[in-house]
Image 1 (cartoon, rainbow, N blue to C red):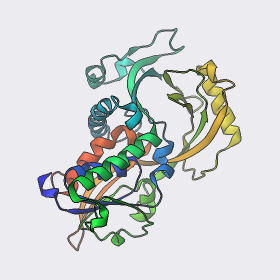
Image 2 (tube, one colour):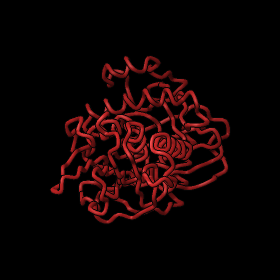
Image 3 (spheres, rainbow, N blue to C red):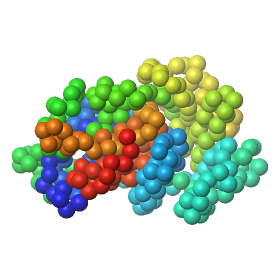
Length: 337
């Protein structure tokens, strides 16, 4: 990204998509500022279960390419889990068959195999996949961005403007006056662009003490319309979940929480009776297709959209960030929109 060096960029959004894009741009030599309505720890990304898997994201071919690029990064980061929040963990993808996956799966995930009856009561795949502790990972992304900016441009106090993360509400894209603006606002794009194609799919989680569970499990019940998952982190279990279409409520529902715990305990009996630590809700920014697109505005400024990743933002973050950075400096065609 030679021609990006010295270019001034404002990235809108501090979730995993925004921060990863800021890292790629800053490490490519751009002078990057991040503007966000709320700090990273209060974004939807901070609530994500964050298992790497290209699930329910369009367009499929591009999403798979973005996901595989991201997988390579996460595998490297898993060598430093305490620092990056990334571990490679074994688990079961329920109601999933090996012969339903394309050749990419066997080629890229050599340990992928059908589950045994002892491992899972139905049809499933046993896999080793990246599982990300999002609060840790978001802090690490923030620090990596700041380090990259300071290494090239010095401290923000020197007046370069690079390497700052500002809590700032933007109601009009014209407010971001940099030559290049990258819109990573997720669900916020619905009003900001405006783009009514972006809509929320609400997810509710229950956080409990980990009684010793080491492997993850995802189970889908098409008849009931539920997806149940248990994701072990070093100090807790993340239990889910819900997929509530067009639901904007951020208030946890106690009855739903009890149902989540009951479903998870049916998969992992150790969960029953585990002490509840927290209840969380996130609104996935779902769109029929990811919008990853470059626009040249009438005044000559460049606007790149990078939003609409639904619940797969972590899975595709690095692939999308690299393509968005290329679009920002004119090094690639628009990908999706």
